[in-house]
Structures are given as C-alpha cells and as structure tokens.
Length: 459
Image (cartoon, rainbow, N blue to C red; front, side):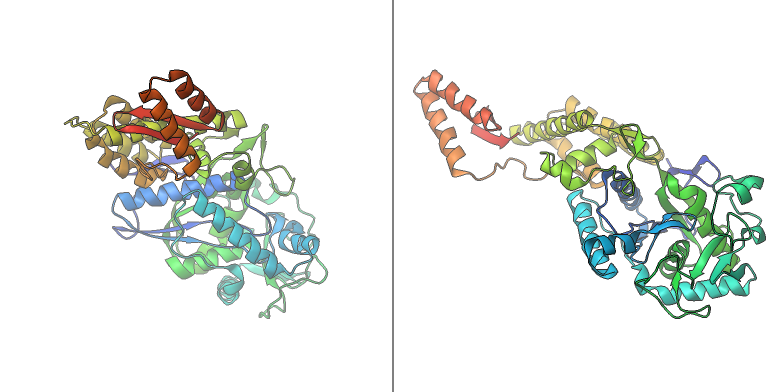
C-alpha cells in the first residue's frame, strides 16, 4: 500500500511521490523563541516527528529542516501587532539574543522529553540574513515589489496564483484588514523593513534597501531553499499558517524561482484546544510541558494523549483526558512487562496486526488506528515472540515501550520492606504482609507477586 497524505494544496488525500525517488526534502515551520512552547505548539512538532519516522520506516532518506525564528516576529502575521522578540526582551531586561538563546534551549529540552527526533538541519534566522537579502533581490528583479513608506513590499496582484493554498480567490485583496497605509493592497506583505514600527529596534542589517531587518515570511523561503533546493517535497505547520504565512511563502518563492509547484505537499495540523479556545501565548492562555510534569505527569503521557487523535482533527485538552492517557500508557507498559517477564513460548502470528499498523500510518498518519493495532497485538497474545513487533511499532510511536523492562528502581528502603513482606508471607503472617503492601500502596508503590519473586514499581 502506498503512503497517502492529505495535501492542503488541493484539499485531498494524495499518493506521496517525492521529486527524487527514495529521497524526501521536508521543511517544518519552527518556533519563534520569545517564550516557552505551549503544549498546543508541541502538537505540531509531534506531527512532524511521526511524519519523519513514518517516511524513514518506509526506507526514504529524509532531510528534515526546521527554522528557529530569532529575528522579531510580529504578533500579527500580516505585518501588524507587536514585535514578540523585542517585547519579551524589554520585559525581561535582557537582549533579544539572550532571550532567543534561553527559549531555544527550553524548546529543545521539551522536544527531547517528548522523545521527538531532532531535525537534520536547524537554521537560525539571524544566521541567514544574507540568504534572505539575496532572495528578496531576485523577487525585486522579477518586478514583483514596490518601495513605500520606507519598506519593501511584495505586490500580490502581480502573482495570479496568490491565495491558491488558502483558496482566497478573488476576495484576496480585501481578505485582511491592515492599518499600513503604504500598502497598495491589503494583502501585500513586507519583504524588508527599513522604517521600523518600534523605537530602538534591536537587530538591524545593511541591505540594498537601507539598514533594517527582514519580514517574517521571507526567512522560511530562504532557509528551506538553501538546504532543500528550489523545489522540495513537503512543507508542514499549523492550520493558522495557511491563509497568510504559507500563502505568502508560495508567492515569493515561486516568483523568485519561476518554478511551480515550489512544494508538492502541504501538511497542516489542527489546534489543541483549551476550554474551547485555541492556546495562545500572546493571550496568556496556555500550558507548558513543565506545568504538566510539575502536576505529576510524564512527558510521554502527553505524547500518548496527542497520538490518540488524528493530526487533522481538533483536540480538546483537559486534565481528565490526560489522566485517561496516563492510565492507558501505564496499562500498555504493564502488559508489555508481563509478556516480557513470563517468557511464554508461542508461535502466535502478529502479521495481521503489523499490517494494520502500517496501513494506519499509510492512511495519512492515522496514529489512533496505529495505537489500536498495537493494543490488539498485546491483548491477543501473551507470547514473547510479539515483542519484536512491539519494538518495530514503537520506532514510529516513540513511546519507549521496551525501556527498562524487568527492572525496578533502586531504593533500599522499599526493597527492605518488600523483603520483610516476603518473609512475613513465608511465616504465614498475612496481616503483617497486607499491612506492608498497604503502606507501600499509600506511597504510590504497586507490587506484583511472581513465581520468581515480588517486583515493585512506582504508580
């Protein structure tokens, strides 16, 4: 069965066929590092992770590029609002680059804790200004720009296919309200600022249009093409990127290169919703991974929770739902530990479950169905021969299902109590044995009696 993906450009499921057989160029929009990533942001990066793991499972050589936006990004995608980087720097009493370095490290700490494989290339915007200027010059030479009010703009009326991704159609010119009187059309966007909207702009560079800084959209075009070439296979991001950011990327990139399509497949994940509203750092309405950890959850509980919904479906977050994911993941691990420890021989065939698992991934990365195939496998067989299949499935799911099998933590006090309970049972002092079990249970320790002895683990 071929891999099929939902392509936003066309709004349909399509068979995936890369430009170069066996190789995939993939660009995923990265973070603007002015604050901690919230768990809604992290859903996008988990989606990218599942995509990359699936592609590599199928034998593709994947070059995954993800940018770090450490140049000011306005709070409005259409060149409006506050400069997020500058605002945070002023609030923290730090330089913009100090803020960027701190939150970049925090972001990758979250990625590592969620077991998300790091991209192949991670370019920073501040280190690719020359590439952006060169690309803007190509767009200008093609006749698609105008200079007004101190800034260089892209004229969307010169690009007939503008809005194809977002399906803006003939209403594109009035689709967004903008307060910039220098624009000829409401949808035009800045390629290079020389007249900043903010006093004491922190980061400025010389350019053919004057000293200033790049518009936000140009960085993704410049850096993706630098590392993936002027045409590549997949571009991904959240659904909020469709109407403005990704639409503008296509216009400027295809103008510069003259190549269509610039990208063959566009993948967009839906929002993680909190109290019936999109999580938003600018509105102060968001949860971080650290908050969940401080509340007693493992990062992989969140990963399991996110895998339980299709990436193109809105997902309502609640702590009750996260509790369900936590309990399901624990039950899954307990099943696998039991299968591993009991060492039952068997010739039970797991082929059908593996086929269902792969079929689920091939059907637009259906992780809920993939999880169902895993559960079916471990429920229908208790023989150790299935564990190789579990390992194979987990290479995509990334839940560390085979980690520390058969091993307990080392804690002399708990181990002494377990030994005391075993001695009490041997002496038929069941009241004492039950009392010790209850004491350990109150501490969050569960016991499992086996022929080979008693093992313990934290709940």
